[in-house]
Length: 327
Length: 290
Picture 1 (cartoon, one colour):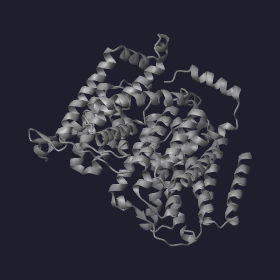
Picture 2 (picture 1 turned 180 degrees about the horizontal axis):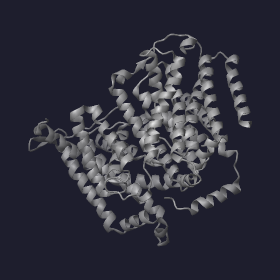
Picture 3 (picture 1 turned 30 degrees about the vertical axis):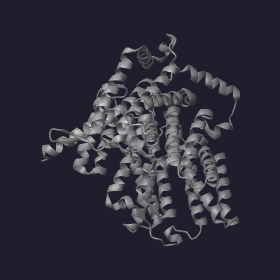
Picture 4 (picture 1 turned 120 degrees about the horizontal axis):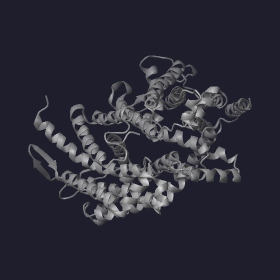
């Protein structure tokens, strides 16, 4: 209940922003920050609650993006109908990759490698086959109207994105409080123990992958609607995977507000560096990489973990972890 | 059917490329076998080494093969420092942390290179770049032949270090039983760092052999990294002979796949092998069953 109230407050506060400002810069900032929140929250479902670290979430992002573009351009589907379709496509890809990996018991770094390789396979396929526009990419025709999900002002996109982020937050809060979420966290913490008490780890992890992939696919579909363009590098390149993962880890894995916090902090940081250094290519990613290393080194529980900072407990935790063998 | 005169050069070409792949994979498998971590920064480190060789040639006029005694120790030091200064410190004894930190290092290195050197693809010119040697019906570029020989020599040296020296004994002890090794007075952190250093030193050698017939740009490592992972997984995590054979095999698959399916689709063969091996036989050809 407390979480639902907090989500409601968040939605109202962010939803009101377009009423107070017409500035394209501000609205654009809010929109892209929300977009980063969605990607991180999507990664958090599988990585944070499920403990399965994917290094190739761009796989689901790109699938959603291409599904959204192709459904409109080649099948003539309305974008509002294409969005759930795109999510379904991503979920299906997630289901396939998840089933293949978890069925054979892949975990840890192996799972990270498989997702990375799958994203790369999809990228090569997207460069080669004609219906994705090959290396040139797909350009969505400009038809500005709300019915076409192409809003005249940024405000429309802010509300649309807010809706998607709310969906992600509701899913996460459900994971925190539901029986399924408890299963998922049990599998993350100790798979054997979870199996021993009757949880089916395969089914639970698979469901988490599907949910995570669907949310990521929504992010891809949104990208296409805003920028009206997609190519294999944007869709399946490492950049999106990294953005999603770093935001979630910086904010705090397996928490409701951590990924939102992390994504917004990173977004502000990236914006600041853009102002300081100009549009130097790659500078954002250097910052992301450094932040990732420092967070893992200094704040393993992320920014959200700061609130629960307790020196005594931290020392006790450190003592138990150093006692354990690494392997 | 394909003519022998076409297939044979393609296979030979694949074997010479595969030898360099094997060298890269050897470093990866050494790091995995001892530290039990997957070094996501491997491709980025190779990129750094390639830039090192490139600038030694361009700025100081040092031939890539003479750069070997510079690049190998330099990469070793870089590896030792990275493991002791960053990776070990950030790991907190958790595998996931190491995974994320090595990913972070690779992101930082690749994008620093992008900022410093732009995304231009660079090559070097040497007197022997275009020389070829005839083997039966095939013409093989001389640098590729040298790379093949060099990769075999370096692999043999590495094997010698691991099998015959005190350091090698310590490495094998740590990889088998970390706690026990520590109790016997082995400095585990030092051995870890030595391993990481040796792994990156392999990349230094690989870069010297690669560059005369190859190119460098900030993204060059990512192309190799999945290939190297494929080889390590195929050969069995931590297995030296597996990495060598796997490297040659993947080189041939890539070369013949490119011949049959065209350049860009030919690469897919590697990923398909990778995913299939991970799913069906994660212990690889030579790895012990987990």
